[in-house]
Every structure is written in C-alpha cells, then in structure tokens.
Amino acid sequence: MSISKCDRKLIHLREENKTLRAENESLRKKVKDLEEKLNTNSRNSSKSPSQDPNRSRKGKTKPSGKKQGAQKGHKGHARESVSPENITEFKDI
Image 1 (cartoon, rainbow, N blue to C red):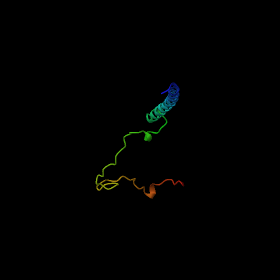
Image 2: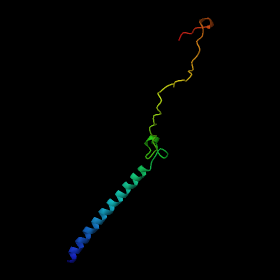
Image 3: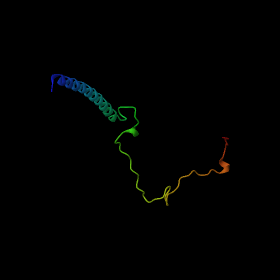
Image 4: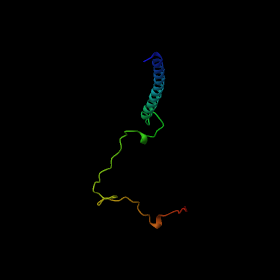
C-alpha cells in the first residue's frame, strides 16, 4: 500500500471511530435513563403502589363451601318494634 492510501484509510478509520464513540455515548446515556426508570417505585416517585413492579398480589380466596349471608342457626339482630302507645313524637323527613 502506498502512503497516500494508508493516510486515507487512517482518516476514514478515525472518522468511523469518532462516530462509533458518539453512538456508544448516546447508547450508554439511554441505558442509564432506562435503568433509572426501571428502579422507580411508589416510594421514590409519584407512582401509585399498584404500579410497583414485582409487588405481591393477593390470590383468590378458596371457597369454603358455605353460602353467602347468615348461616343456619345464627340468631339475628334487629330493633324491637315500639308499640303505637309509646310513640310520643313524629318527624317528617
């Protein structure tokens, strides 16, 4: 190879090196920004706790086999009725 060819090759490689270094720097910055974004949670940002990654979620409860509401044999609780003779005052709503 002649000296002029080597010089042109060297100039080309230096330009390519400069371009690659700039690209490398921008990619490093992008990775850093994305890592910071991944490390945010409800304690160190304004995110709600439901948006936290890897949070424990409650599993579905297993059915107990009982029906909803009061079970058989349960003594109910209710107010006793007042006889009309004991009523002293009526209020309109």
